[in-house]
Length: 289
Image (cartoon, rainbow, N blue to C red; front, top):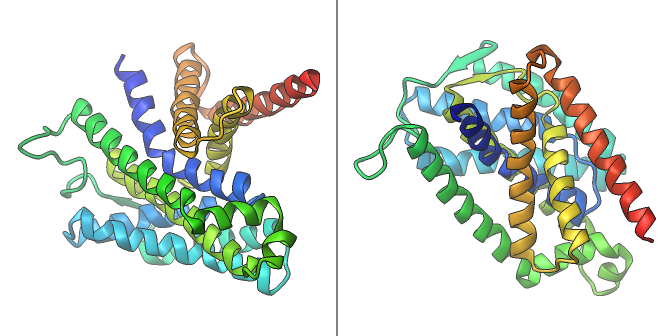
């Protein structure tokens, strides 16, 4: 039971990545690979600031700003330098590896012995159950904020940019600026996942972000399958399904390990699982058409 509870905790930590990829892929139709670097960046900033005994509520805004900066650089390269979104993300992701390594000063940085989000309080004890309560509350607040932003006029302009860029330009809205802001938001949310994971697992590793975009993509695909299947249009419910997809994804991986699959093959299993989700989803909807 503890094994699956740990998977749920990881899934909740990855909700930020799922939300970020939902914004970049589903709203703006941009394949953003910056995710691998901005996730690690969030964890690195968190570990460094915790080591200087800075409280987590001061760390969170800095993490958001760092992730937003990474995303905005990708957006700038894509929109202003006219480089494809995929290559822009790869370039920034590659650069972030060196940035993260330079900031850390070494390949691994512990954060277990410092007071953070999961250290407990008089109301919520420091335990697995306490961590679950804190994470659920954190993700609910995060989801409410994202949902509110997406239903404002600004959020509608973001969604319209992804649906029809020519139309949004005709209305006098700068689509390039919207893309930069959108990618900044997406990577800020991704960095939040790094912020949470660094404190949950108690350390930050320079390679922790490798392949993490696949986890987020799988989470979004699971949620998007339900959204399309049941024709859901409510933003709040869509976000809930995307967040649920992140948890389900981790539970599937936990089940895979529990039946005896070699942990060294976990990345391979993850890739195959996402491939199956995408293939079955496409075949299913084509058959319905």
